[in-house]
Every structure is written in structure tokens, then in C-alpha cells.
Length: 84
Image 1 (cartoon, helix red, strand yellow):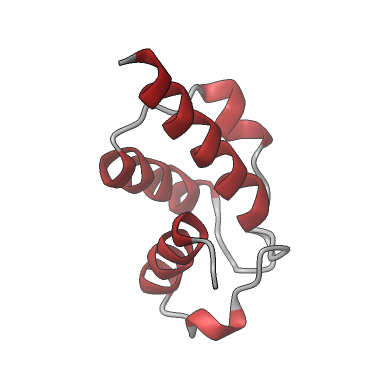
Image 2 (spheres, helix red, strand yellow):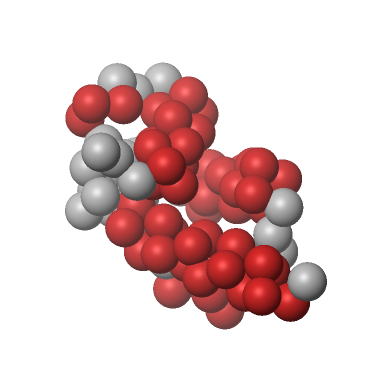
């Protein structure tokens, strides 16, 4: 069963870049997906809205693949849940 956070992230990327979601893997990098810095910034805002989180700049800059972003979202969502 696919990871729900990863599945949602893949859908967001596929929609933004007009790609077939099946072509996006956990190890796909943003460079491989043709995402530039503007695409990445737009995706970041979409992620923050969708998951109700705030991604710190230093964390965002270190995320280069679907897997890294999925893990980052998971940590931030878990941290938010633990803070309430």
C-alpha cells in the first residue's frame, strides 16, 4: 500500500508539471522532474497549505527528491501532532 503522504506529494508534482504520476518514483529528484526554483517554491506553498505545516527554509533547501520531501513532511506533521 503506497504511503499516503508520498501519494499526495506525487499527485501535486504530477499536476504542477503535467506529468504522469506513474513516472514519479520516491527517488525522483526535482531536477529529473524538470522542476526549477520557481516550481519548487510553488510546490512548497502547496505542501504547507495541504498539510497545515510550515517548512523551515533550511529544511526546504536540503530536500532534493520525492523521498526526502515525503520524510520531511512526515517529520513536520508528527511534530505538529506532538505539539498539540
